[in-house]
Length: 287
Figure 1: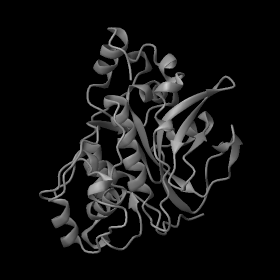
Figure 2: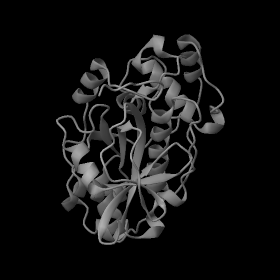
Figure 3: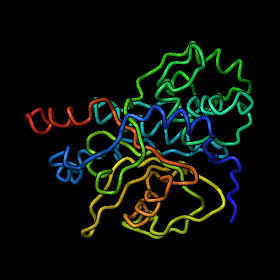
Figure 4: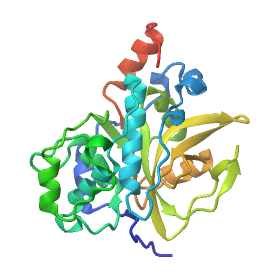
């Protein structure tokens, strides 16, 4: 069945795939680098989900921008203990610009890779810095319809750190689990809609989605339930997070291109292994 992008998630362009493949910083993620990760991941006080805001994209095709911001908010909280609200509409609007000047103002969705390029500064748009502004400086109600006005405004807004300097293909399930309490998130796209199950009163993605559309969400944490790990994936439909089972993640990650057709990346702060050892091994504590 062919995929219909609609105004949701777009396929990666050849240019963004080329740019990102040439600038990947995370070659591999190993659980053995994060000694004691299970204890931290099982500690409810370390879970960012209790602080992340509920997202609702409404009728906009902004899911990629919203998930990008939620990932940045989760990483920032892990590192600094500070929870802020990044500008979803900036992330969406500027991701349009990175895909094509003609894409700006069309509200047809953006690609997973365009968001990664925006956060990491992997683009050639002058005067537009890596990172994201705060929602207070770029409200969700503001959507620029022209490339020129968007870039002019972006050049003047104050940027905040998005806390991602290392990124790469999503690792296998166990290695991803270990990276989450070290500040990593997973920026993913899947086919949509899904056939949902339920777990602990929440939606459970327990079968690989096969809808004709696409949707972007963000893996921010995991929970150990009845002897099994489930990923907690932040959504932008007003329902907080949904659970994703290991079997679904494994099938999506093991494709020739992980999370094809839309793609997915692990996003990590700088020096995650060194920071982990400083906080947990050397007695520095953890947020």
